[in-house]
Structure formats: structure tokens, C-alpha cells
Amino acid sequence: MPSEPTIYGNMGTEITRDPNTGNGGGEDQLITRRYELLHPAGMSWTSASMADANGATFSELATAANWSRKYMRKNIPISALEVNV
Image (cartoon, rainbow, N blue to C red; front, side):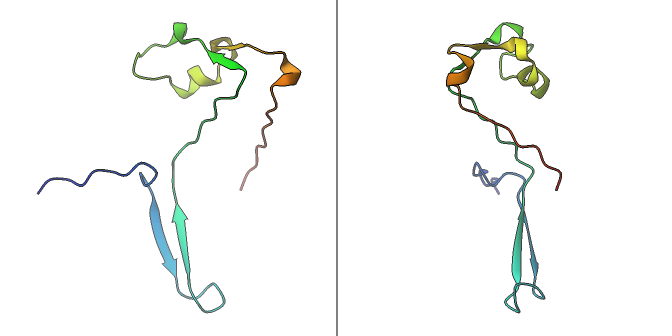
């Protein structure tokens, strides 16, 4: 039997159901381990330091030297909010 193709966005998604929550109607919980990455407008990725041509690692993406700014900093509207849940 051939394997089903994985639909992007559903990779690593787990669904659990708790019938005792949600005001008696039950509750479905969706849990995913997928990472999202934003490429901010005004920044350019320099792929000169990539070890693998297939894609960058998280540490390469986090290194400031791998990015170059194309616009003045005040014209790149982006912010980050880091929380512990």
C-alpha cells in the first residue's frame, strides 16, 4: 500500500479530545511542533556561509552576519515578543 502524501501544515500535528471541557461540549486540542520563520522586508539573506546548499540551519538563520540590511533600520517595521507558555 503506498504511503499517503503529507499535506504541508499537518506535519507533526497531534489532535487530542477532552469531552469534560468546553462547557460540556468537549474540546479538541491541536498540538504541532512546526516552526514558522518570517523573512522581514528590507533584509537580504546572504547565503555565503551556508554549510548545506539545501537549506540553512537555525543557528545560521540566527547569525546576524548572514543578513544584510537593504533599507534604513527605522524603515523596517518588525518586533519580536518572546514568551514562556
